[in-house]
Amino acid sequence: MRLFAAVLPPKEAVAELAAEVRRLRELPKAGDLRWTGHESWHFTLAFYGEVPEEVLPELRERLGRAAHRHGPYELRLAGGGQFGSRALWAGADGDREAMRRLADTASAAARRAGVSMEEHRHYTPHLTIARNRTHVDLRPYVAGLADFAGSPWTVSELSLVRSHLPVEGIAGKQPRYETVASWPLGA
Image 1 (cartoon, helix red, strand yellow):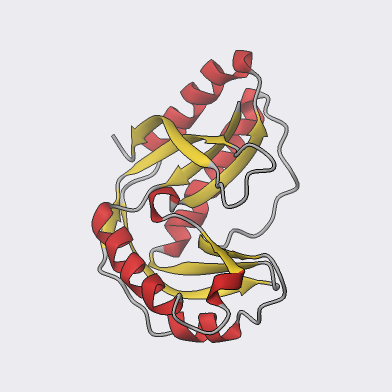
Image 2 (tube, rainbow, N blue to C red; image 1 turned 120 degrees about the vertical axis):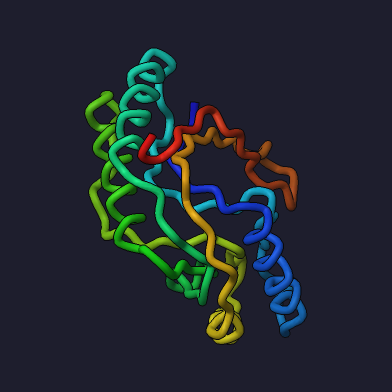
């Protein structure tokens, strides 16, 4: 099962970003980008990859404990950036340090449950909104997000999400995400 830990933004935050993305999709060459669907928008805290079914109970228990050790915190979607020329993302403003600590704990919980994790990288809270299929210059899109600032909201839970990859060979298909479990923060 392909899994990751995530923070899922509320519908209101998604709607604000969706309005901004509609504006970006009017920029030149926007049709050459592969835009992610707003129903799949999330902040990945830790990517686990393929997790054996027998590891899932331990992972769930450890993520539940991890969520309880972190209190709710304020966040909002704001600004944006790019990862090289391959991805355009919306950023986060607010208690980014709380988000980083939650990401570190979600990674540690998986390692302790026996999930083989990639090397640790500095966590950058981001929500991917488009992927570059060709060589479109992403700088105008990043500039278009520079002044974006959504309404603040309270991150109150940690989610374990399953990724269903699209069938190969079908153009335009995107992964589908299913929330497997969620835990309230600080409960």
